[in-house]
Image 1 (cartoon, one colour):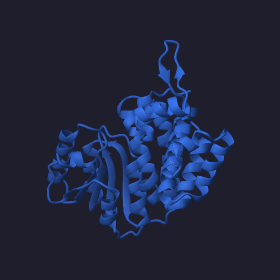
Image 2 (cartoon, helix red, strand yellow; image 1 turned 90 degrees about the horizontal axis):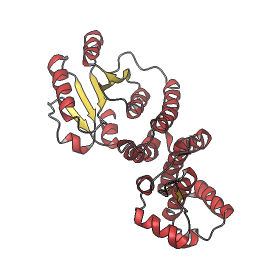
Image 3 (cartoon, helix red, strand yellow; image 1 turned 90 degrees about the vertical axis):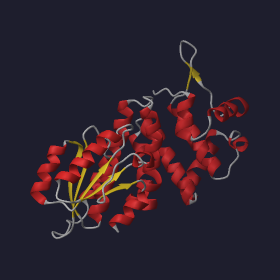
Image 4 (cartoon, one colour; image 1 turned 135 degrees about the vertical axis):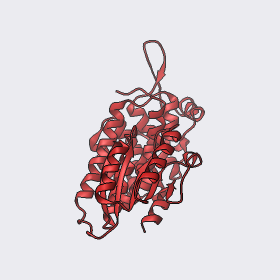
Length: 293
């Protein structure tokens, strides 16, 4: 059983710790547990309940009304919301379901929420509306060492399995299409975004050479000499790595055969990058879609 601090609940739910404490005291919707040394914590069941409460509130319910529901009534409202909720409410609810089931190692619950998302939005829109927000929330815990490696691996591998299956179902690309090399530089291991880009490009009948994570630059030399790619695409996820990325980009541009190089990163890192004319930063999903379209 996982143990969460109130700060963890805040990061995962978006509800301020102060508000969570008020809900505890005034409405008794959560009851914190205690360690042997009297330290407060919350378990998977309480995290799931809080995330479901947030979904109901976002759909228009009041916490005072929610607190009076029996367990059966509460579950019925969540089920009804799942079936009839508006798009923005459904996105938030699916994100919360993926988080709570993933952290609890509940593969059945994760599978249900994942399939619901795909049926509602399709793979590309699901990544944009549901999976990416989920990964951002989990990333807060991961960066603060409050998410265990086993939880992170469990969630990541479930998503990867689904993306690999979607890629396998695509038709082979055209021989004469552009050649995109997808990779993560040395030290980068989080490749879900790269896998989604792989799926999107292949769905456009683009030739993709997928190298995966933690790729030494000497391996890129071999690819460059062998197939002469037209585009390279990479992601920078880790923080405080601008020097390494700048060195990587400089070496690629100076030694490769004048390709277009795209790096997906946040806007903070973008400002610190030294990009040449054929190097481009991508800071949001819409920008990537515009490039490939």
